[in-house]
Each structure stands twice: as structure tokens, then as C-alpha cells.
Length: 480
Ligand SMILES: Cc1cc2nc3c(=O)[nH]c(=O)nc-3n(C[C@H](O)[C@H](O)[C@H](O)COP(=O)(O)OP(=O)(O)OC[C@H]3O[C@@H](n4cnc5c(N)ncnc54)[C@H](O)[C@@H]3O)c2cc1C
Image (cartoon, rainbow, N blue to C red; front, top):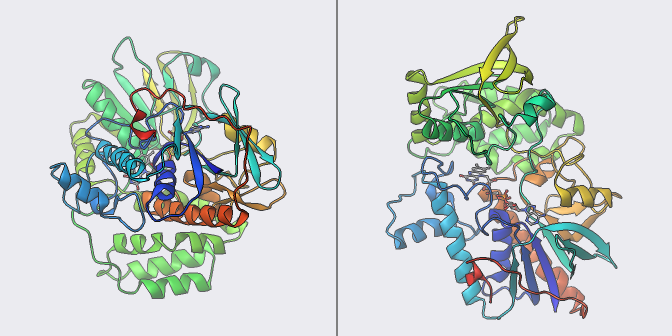
């Protein structure tokens, strides 16, 4: 029996495993799913239990499979949840849906033992024979694999270079916005570095947890994400013409001119134009050379993130309320240094000013977005894979080198058909890769390809492979 090892238990790993298990897919391979310590199906985004952490995509668009996008809505209706298609609902509901979908697929897959889910982390992947692999797990056991899918999400965030070691050691600086320390005392002054969607989540949690704290968010442009309209709008009528113009001249300045000209027409809804670019983004990104891609990152990325990753209206209202109550300030400025050992001293240069300013903070939370710098990462597995030449870091710090279907490239540049990546680490290859619509589309392609690829090789037996199901708390429901 051949074997596919899927590494990572977030939405991306779930979508791949789910696709492989779907009835009708003739995968003649066992699946080993290494999910680490987090509950499978939830990952970072859907592990939260906070009701104010909402999906930033309308409920109607949140299915796990590309050919069943309405599945989340159907699930919500079956559970009696008050959800309509255009709503933005708590992310934990979506996590429940993914868990329940996987449990159902496992039950229906009809082959006991086909999925072997383990709460262990992969720490190494080595090539073995031609396009075969050895996967080492944290306790040292080695698993042989005919195919490997890396679905590990974004990399662990590294502290900003402007933070002093003393500030880091003080415990008052939080590098990972999803893992807060337990504090002996509620902080009175909280500074959040960043003002994107992650920062918004952090601000809402801080405001709930510490109702008397003064909150300040600092980012270079001091701009919050734009807001979704309360109801979905109509698609932009002339999107195809706009895309044709852009494809004809793959250069950032030309693209900006084309988009600005489009938006000059008052009747055009900017959200529709941005949404219409989303599906075409990987193709457009592919057309840009390295210089144009870095131009985009330097000059335009912040603006794209603002308009593309929008807040639900309820979230925008909650943030506006905090601002009008004087509890939240948004500051545009560059963070020059973060020092001290409690309270911390956040030195900034406000935008457009030469005069530096200091903000005193009992707690500083770094919320600067998804980390993708693979060279020098603390992620043990990615570090090992780069070191061994199994994969290669993207030259612009945008994850790993891969082709458009997620075939990861080794040090020699060859794209391996049975070593696939999915999710945020494909940013350099696709740019648009982290959201569920992109994840589920790629999961389908990967599952189809792996089934075809392994099928064409015929069964290769790995007699030495010992796959014991490791303890997984109360989640044995997934394990046949
Ligand atoms: C806060 C937040 C909110 C979001 N909201 C939305 C939304 O509303 N709609 C939308 O479409 N997208 C949203 N996204 C985008 C999101 O990236 C995707 O929807 C999706 O959750 C990404 O899943 P993932 O599996 O790629 O990554 P992750 O969720 O990060 O999961 C990766 C998993 O792999 C595990 N892992 C890492 N290394 C190893 C290893 N060596 N061995 C074993 N396991 C490992 C990690 O512990 C983690 O559980 C959001 C993202 C964030 C961060």
C-alpha cells in the first residue's frame, strides 16, 4: 500500500485529507496525517473560541471543498445556527464545521485504517530513492512516504529587529499574537504593532480582557483594513477588459494606472474591482518579474492588504466604538526601537515628522501579519528541509519556491510531483494562497495529481513502516 503523509492539521491539511478521503476518489493509498498539538481542522484561524473573532469571508463562501462551497451554510442550517449567506459569523463555528465534515468523511470512507491521524509533529523530511521520502516525527520515529504534503501554515513569527533582548526577556513583549502570556496584573497601556486584520483581532481581545486598558495601534500608514459592505455587491461589469489591460503590461505602475482609471468612474464599486482581481491574482503575479514583485512589496503591498483583507461590518463598528470612547488610538509611524524591561518604551517616528516620540507600554503585542521568511526561520521542519536542500526558500522572503500547483522546488530548482505545499508558504509562487477559496481549489488539484501520480507508479511496498496511532486525547473519532 502506498502512503501519503500530510503535515499540518489546519484548514489546508484538512482540505487535502478531506479531498483524498472523498467517496469516488480512487486513491489506493493510506494517509498519515501529522497534526501536531492543535485540534485537527482548526489551525490558527479557527481555534479561537472568542465570539468577536469573525470570519472575514461571508458564510456563503466558506465550504471546505471547491465543488461544495455552500456546505458550511447547509451545516449551519442543520445545527439550527442563525446563519444567512451574506453573514460574517464566529470563526469557531467554521472550525466546528471542518471537524464535523472530516469525521463524516472518515466514517464514510469505508476502509478501516485508511486515515492514521497523529498528534505528533514532523521534524524532518528527506528524499528517499526517486521521489520517495522519509518523514521523521518528533520522537525520532521515521515514516516512509510515497508523497508528502506540507500544510504547515505561516511560520512562527520572529520578533521585530527593533526589540531589545531586555524587552524580549521582560515578558512584556508578545511576539506571537495568538499566544498571550498569563499576566499577574491587567496591563493599563497596551501597544499593538500593526493595524491589519490580526491587529484588529488582538485589539478586540485586549479590549474585552482588559476593559480599563488604553490601547494604541502603531503602523507605518496608520490605516485599518477597509470594511466589507453589509450586503454583497454586483461584480464589476468590465473586469475582463481591466484584466486584459493588466495582462498586456505586467508592470506595477501600469497596473496602478489601469486600476485608478477604472475607479475614476463614480459608478464603480472599488470592492467589486478588488474582488474581481482575486481569482486572477496568481496568474498576474506569475507574469511579474522579480524586480516588479519587489516593487509591489515595497510600495503597494500595504494598500492591497487594506482593500483585499477587509473587516466585517460588525468588527468595524466595534473598533469605531473603542475609538470614539477614547480607548483606542491608531498612530501612523515607524517603530524605531522597543526597549526597557517593563514598562516598555516604544520609540516611534510619527509619519511625516522628524521628531521622535515615546509610548510607555505595560504590554506590547506584535501583530504584523503572517510570517513567511523561510530562511532563518525557527520552524524546525522548514529549517531542516531547506538545510537538506529538499526545498528552497523564496527569494523575496515569501515562503518556499514552488510551481503554481504547489510542487515544491528543491535546491536544484526541480519541482517534485509528490512533494506538495499548500497555504501561506506558497505566497511567492501565487501571492494569493492563504484564503479558503484558494486553499480548497489547490487541495483538489493536489489530491487529483497525487492519486494519478501514485496510481501510475503502482503499489510500492514499504515493509519497514510501523505506523502506530499515537494518543490523540478525545479525538479518536477521526481514527478508524
Ligand atoms: C486569524 C486568522 C483569521 C482568518 N480568517 C479567515 C477567514 O475568515 N476566511 C478565510 O478564507 N481565510 C481566513 N484566514 C486565512 C487562513 O490562513 C486560512 O483560512 C486557513 O485557516 C489556513 O490554514 P492552514 O492550514 O494553511 O494554516 P494554519 O491554520 O496555520 O494550520 C497549520 C497547522 O499546521 C501545524 N503544523 C505546523 N508545523 C507542523 C509540523 N511540523 N508537524 C505537524 N503539524 C504542524 C500547526 O500547528 C497548525 O495547526 C484567516 C487567517 C488567520 C490567521
